[in-house]
Length: 392
Length: 98
Image 1 (spheres, rainbow over the protein chains, first blue to last red):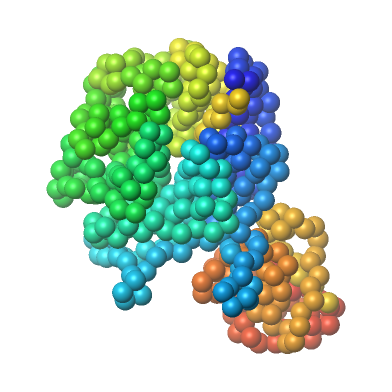
Image 2 (cartoon, rainbow over the protein chains, first blue to last red):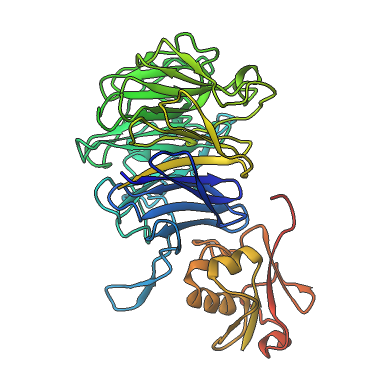
């Protein structure tokens, strides 16, 4: 493998950081889409030159951007026209329209609002883009208000996989502090019909039929801040990670609690162990060792910065419960940054590279399984997402 | 020829510099100008008007000839100077936050 390309989404644009296999010296390009909120940028596993980006703004709404040359140039697909059966031109904007009931034409469902009343779904932005493992033109989008969409034409047009919102628990979903967002999409490399998603604050869900039907998979989650701490849905899952070499073993950073499941989410157990705090957002799994996992503990849900003013990644080599702080190269005093849920990623090199970005605009890299760290960049805008491509 | 000035971020999205010049058929209204703009720059669809309702996005305003036209009917005629190409139709982002 020749090197890595780190795709960074920030509050004010996207950046691309590239390095060779040593991952010691870096080239920085960007900002792309300067001034826009870039919630997520992710490359296609099937074609590393194909990259998708979520570009949004409170002024101008949501755009999807696509690159076919590894991020050098970009276009907003969906600007073209298709033709209706009658032969009239029909615009195909890259917009996200929620499905309605086939019988009544009315909205599929409502969700719970902050005050407990029911509230209609309203599209706000795309939080996460998950390209297909096999087809560069197929990509999934997790959006706020929570739903999953699919494009099979390279992001030109999108349709909702509405079996998720329509399966019956929608009225119990509620927004977390960051909004009601579908932020995690995991595709199973061993089973093209299986996928997992997670929603704040609804929980984790799995489909075994390519996204047509879904079921909640939250058994074992315990959330004291909701009326029924063991409810089927309503849990604020922050992120889920899986090593693709071991599909079905999942690791979760919940609002509080780090969890694992060894049966594709049927049952979860807590593995927070000796973490100084088990609140956090980011979690990931070493690409070479599926029992080695990483989290960045955050002080609390009231104080979204690292514990004890020290930026420490915690690593467990035993799949949880026993954790060690990784501090070499990371600031150990006067540090008050946060690391968001999509802002950690791992490469496929040996030894595994781990990358994460902070609210303070630093992007850190470890090229030795987390033993030591260097800041690739210090002063980007607040980082929303970090994804890494391992280049052939 | 109708002249349209876009805000900085939308000029970048449309890959244009300076003013946009458009041919508008028939009556020159907000709707006909924005329809022509979106036909020429499809990537702007949804960024000025909501995809579904076609309503002006809340943080944008429309001006021309030093008048705020944001709350005029989209089918009202724009000022003669805009229709004649003497003055531009301005799309302006609200100056707040960000």
